[in-house]
Length: 219
Image (cartoon, rainbow, N blue to C red; front, side, top):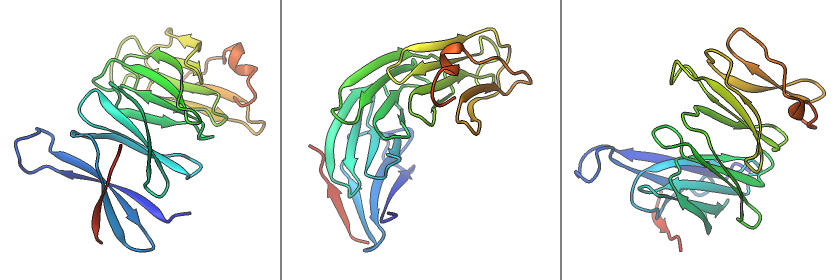
């Protein structure tokens, strides 16, 4: 409903407490012009995302192991989802599952949690993964080791919402990107942006879809 905005700020001056400076998240209420600062764990803000349905948002913050927090859309803290070596938050399009990942300089751990009861529903690991995205039907995740990061051992993988792998293709040469493409019938296909097109795996072909400032306390 466009009433609330999350604002990420970085203070790079200063204190000798951190080489990277201090990052914070503010909650901005559009109708009142009020900014409210979240009381987050000490350390950087790694990632934050709104759920696609607009009812909640998630913040991943703090020195590793970081803490992943779940809030209502009005900024009310609801629950700590998990704590671990995470720096990436990927929420499914239907807002029912979140993938918490440790990419970049981390080891590639992936944990998937239900946003209904916050139970852990699956794990995986994808070291050196660069892009990692949900399919539109929230049933699959696609990730790739791309030549933008490493020139050898490029690959792409497709896994189910619970982390179970259904496609692993390591014989692809250099990959610059990999994405889900959608046809009119919404069947999911995979395109490698490398000048070639590989046939989709049968498991995928059979899928249905190829101001004033306050502090918000977190318990």
